[in-house]
Length: 188
Image (cartoon, rainbow, N blue to C red; front, side, top):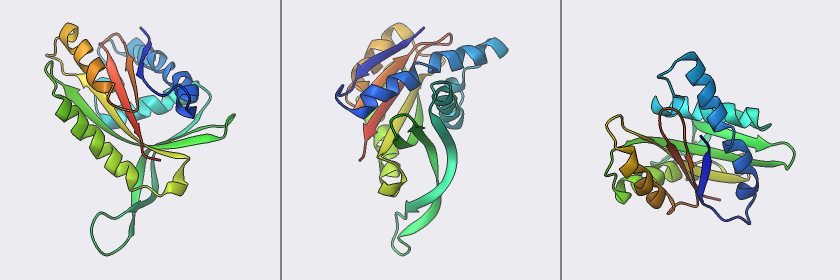
């Protein structure tokens, strides 16, 4: 069980810091597996997955906050800002870098279409764009992909690996109940 980096610009601060954070995700998954043989937070729902990412960040020495209140741009005319919630805020105290993430989760069938993947990641990016730039150094759209229970993993793994490489950063994280994928697009 481990973390596979599928794509990402190695010159960026994300490439320097995120592998440390994401390397703790398998440990979080193992800890849940210790309590229940058939529970993996990434195979449950988006909120559970984001909480697991926050747990991993804490284990890696980062500071993390989930579902916190902040101002977001309103998508309709009228009020420019409204109260909303950010899915995940993450900071590395040593480097002084911080990110705010808006996440979406998709449970993938064996023949997942690239357009389906792109639509979910674009929705996360749209939500991230709505967050004030002053909230973090970078706003990030995140797509969490877990296989559906009926998916054939031998076919699904190379398919999602290939599709995920279209994002700015992508990781495959293996676990007892199968792999999950994290795809990130940096908004700025």
